[in-house]
Image (cartoon, rainbow, N blue to C red; front, top):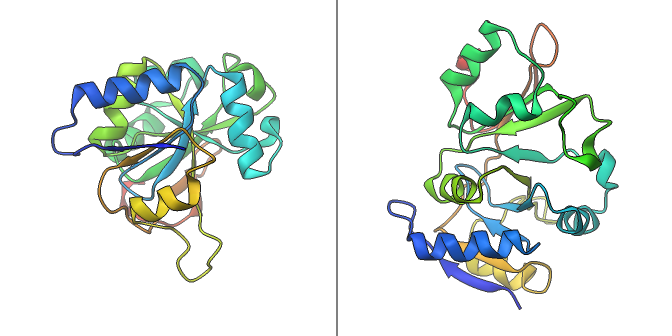
Length: 206
């Protein structure tokens, strides 16, 4: 049974954030709001938690294309090779915001992702997500919770999310209704940049 925790985005309660972070540190999985769709996440440094997410998504962990949710761009050099000034300017313009940027991965990627050449970086414009990552002290890995129903695609109601995910995760955060448009994915690991998926984020940032 997952905990169902109500957190208000305008003013996230520090006690509730601490509760979520404590669960992450103990290897728990959370479903949390972003500035786009609800995401499934775990502590980037907890291998067992990473493996649980990979099992749920039915992918091999080493090959999984999970995003790294960061509080800001200060963690960038931990996971990304040095990027040029023009790329950094795009990131500064777009983030926090509804984008996932694919960038060249550094040698410091967490062990399961060592062989990956690229990494998806995300800084969502959502105070709940950002406070969780800030308090945790390092990124969480994340993947969107798609719906099998092709018409709906993304479930936006936290109570319906809880019904479906109750036995798979440890916490479902009710941060209000989610969006049903995913992030815009831009691959900037090579020049010129490639639009992988046009989502909620405008392409004007490029």
